[in-house]
Length: 537
Ligand code: ACM
Image: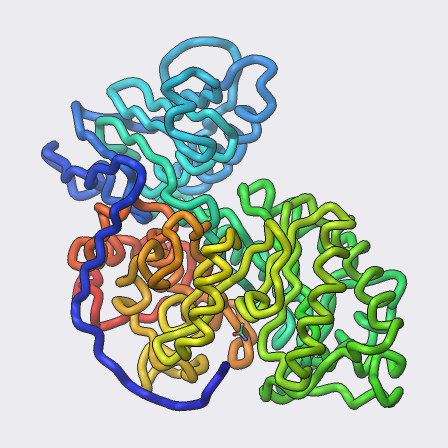
């Protein structure tokens, strides 16, 4: 439950090393004589499983080709994406070709055992004189390998105009695979509406750090953001404002599909959330029938929580839920549909349980799996449900226990501890944007925890991964999102991807600092935390 306590705390340097089930190797420092423009192999975020420097490495030149196999559409897509990344700043043609030959950049997807051994999202990069090879079992793995190559190149690569090279990549081999299958971020497009282009920008930022889930918080008290044909006023009226009273907005189905397709092209699965039974004022204002008293409340543009509830006892509520979930499921190629369930303070516990008993099967009926905030753990989560833990250091034992017990009974967990992973929170009392009900979340605090041991008593294998929610009560522009996500989002991405054995704040902060020129080149304005040794500091 949200409290509005403001507390400052200082976290001691706590090093948590998980007894992870996969073998892991710390990234080796480069032994090669590094020119200032060559990033040592493996000095990237997230830290790779294994990096073995060797030899002089690869240089992209005007003659470089990107080689894919004839007839392999996934390799070609990856090749075109890589070319789009490399062409503006290098100014080179970089043709994508299937004409054979072994020099240049080679992209290969194959089910050979060495690739399968790195898992569905793993990849291998071999950088040598004359050739750079990225291999994977899957197109997602190839894409992640491309992000690695991108980070091994000079930051000026990210500029949109031609820059001076050379474009060298340190020599050697990187083998990499994620620790967790769920590595997400959530964008709250309800408190403030963000356009399709703003969401795409955020997707690209997440993809650079190998995140693979975009949770979209599509409805809340202040705004309903997705067109639902059978209940059109949800979007046209319920989407017509936002926090502070601005004009809000919503996605047409075509626009929403564009977001989903763009995310898929970056190998992120979109998980749509319709928050229920609380956080529903926008829906309640749009349709009087949904209210127990039959009276539609006014639209809401403030930032309080917990005052709204769907009418659990009315049949029309379940017609509404069925229609919304059916239409949303039809727009969702991914596995999960998030039904919220947090802060239902205006719904009795008995009603909350009854509501979730009726709603969870609707998600299954339309072919999706249930995801919910961790309050769902107190309401008989269905088999296969995932609960998202958003407690913090002040969360009561009973509430934690409920989640731990659900995990022991097979419910999977996504961890978003509010005092660590909530990237909507203020960094310090003096930083300008964000909330602070869970305390201040400086960069070290956000990074320095271990998902495997965070919720004591929960089996380590109940943890599917991590997610960084970006709530937007105080955020209304892409510049605001940038400032909150950077530099914390890469840290949550590293917790989700990198082996526990690589976890080390002192080393991480140096790799993180080295990202700053890349953010500058991308036009990302970040928080210059005094905890991080930024270049030139
Ligand atoms: C939440 O922050 N209410 C999930």
